[in-house]
Image (tube, rainbow, N blue to C red; front, side):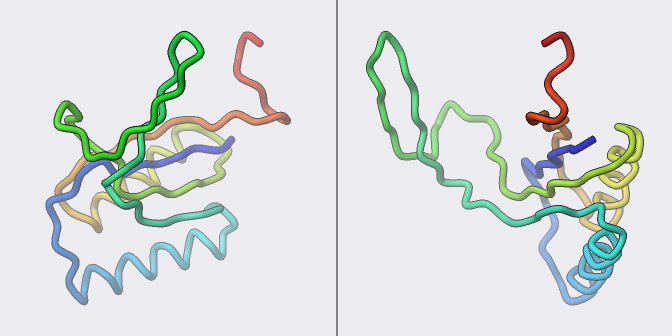
Length: 114
């Protein structure tokens, strides 16, 4: 099962200790084959909407947006519970903040009910 763990906000300012601890955590997940990809995202985005055949492109950030995804990790675990445990470990290192975990479906594991 693949999951996308997204960081939507963080109040921590990375220091040398935090960066070293996070580096060890990322290395551990990489060696275990759990971490497929990770990275930070620019909170300014390009929004693309389609309505009635018309496609509109708008530059962000958006005043109506309450949060933006600023980082992600794509992981592969046996269960959702394992993904939640990895996210909890991440937040124990990162400190205060918020995030989202969503299962990723693909051709080999289509969405339930389809």
